[in-house]
Image 1: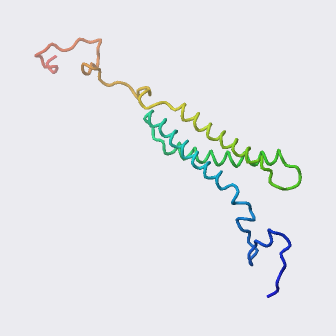
Image 2: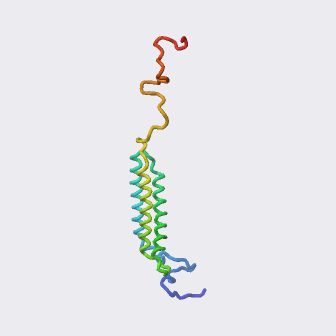
Length: 155
């Protein structure tokens, strides 16, 4: 097997199959930020759930929507920021991460605004129409009721 000399620190980290390692990709540096971001997302999900449960609503789908909107906004924010900050070198600009966080915040804000606009279950307008009043059914109020003790079939 021929031996190769590593010409760069990145090439020295590569294995025999030429795969990249975590150190080469810079994965160790942003690890704490990702954990804080996930914890903040969990906090937002709990807050959204408490707000919707106070309105008498189920929170599961809204929490799922929050997670999807967070990551979709983060992706779109990173793409837009990388496009705006592109200097032609082809390297990742660290300020693009701020764009990603801004996009994530926009996605989360949109879900919270939708959840705030949802009516509570107790304040909804009644569905249908009332069939019987509080004193019992009165099918035809314009006609007098039959006198007590008489059979309506006799009339």
